[in-house]
Structures are given as C-alpha cells and as structure tokens.
Image 1 (cartoon, rainbow, N blue to C red):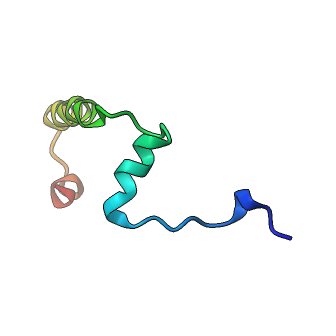
Image 2: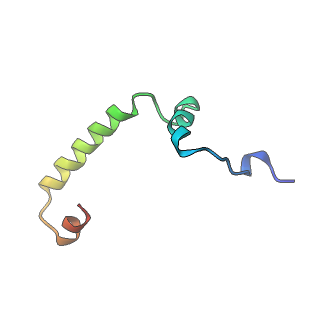
Length: 58
C-alpha cells in the first residue's frame, strides 16, 4: 500500500495561493517580501557589467 504522504495532491491553480497560505508554506504578506527581493535583484543587475546572455534573459 502506498503511503499517504507519497500520494500526489490535486489543487486547482486558482486555489493554490490560498492552499499555500492556509498550510503556512508562505505567509500572507509574501507579496511585500517579493517586492524587496525584486528591488535587490534590480540593484544587483544594474551593478553588474553588461553581458549579452543576461540582456537576452531580461
């Protein structure tokens, strides 16, 4: 018999965020943390020398 922990779960994509928050996999204010991370990434990219591969990614 397969253990319950190994069974896949079926979560509709529109309910995924609610599911993650309810099970405390991410906090309710995750969007604020994302803004800080995006700012840090932006500053890091601006400080880097220009690289053609990075320009293509952006």
